[in-house]
Amino acid sequence: MKKINLVKVEHSVKVGDTCDYIEPNITEDCLFYDNDELVGFYIRDVNKHSSRLGSFVDLADAELRSERVPKATMKRSSGVLQFSTILGAIPPKPHMRRPYSTISSVHSVSSAKIFVKAMSLVASESEKLIKKLAPNIYDNQVELFKQIDDKWKFGSIFTSSISNYNIAAPYHRDTANLVGAVNVIICKRQNSKGGCTTVPDYNITIDSCDNSMLVYPAWRNVHGVTPIIPLSDEGYRNTLVFYPLKAFLNE
Image (cartoon, rainbow, N blue to C red):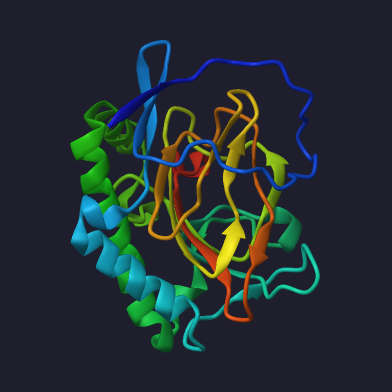
């Protein structure tokens, strides 16, 4: 795989800024290094590395888009259907009168069982791929997760998952994530463009093509997701995201 050395550049982007459309400049399989440390990687097509992972991703995507899975409708832009579904552990939300951690209610919805199982298998196969391509990242995350009780784990090295359908995002940093750990972002995209992850610190925009997988420490840098532009009535972009929350450390 190609080696990309991440070099910081000057920019004026701030948290909360709108993320405009940017053509991706990371479009092939690569490993990301920062000062000789491997911090993440990008795969353009997971099927070339794991056909099992690709099959589970297709199943999870199809189930999410069905009526069998509960969704939260988003209202970040007009004219495009947007929704999301969270699985796994959810931290306390005192402002919503829930001062305790819980597991997503989607797990108890009988019609969503196939989706939950498919997403669990996607997490498991993703972990195997991380272990194969970036064993230092995998070993580090395993070590960090020794501080998290099994009941809060989704897979072995994540606490939670969110599936985002047609959802872009302004520039932000995932400050709730476990420092030192990585996220996994797997994309399903049909008849659309955009929805790419962009990191202004390094002037990189990573292609969010169909079946791509990005492994990156989302707590580390400000980043955004470029607008998603459907090219037909059936056009969409869905991401299956797996992440580790620090709220569950020693809980």
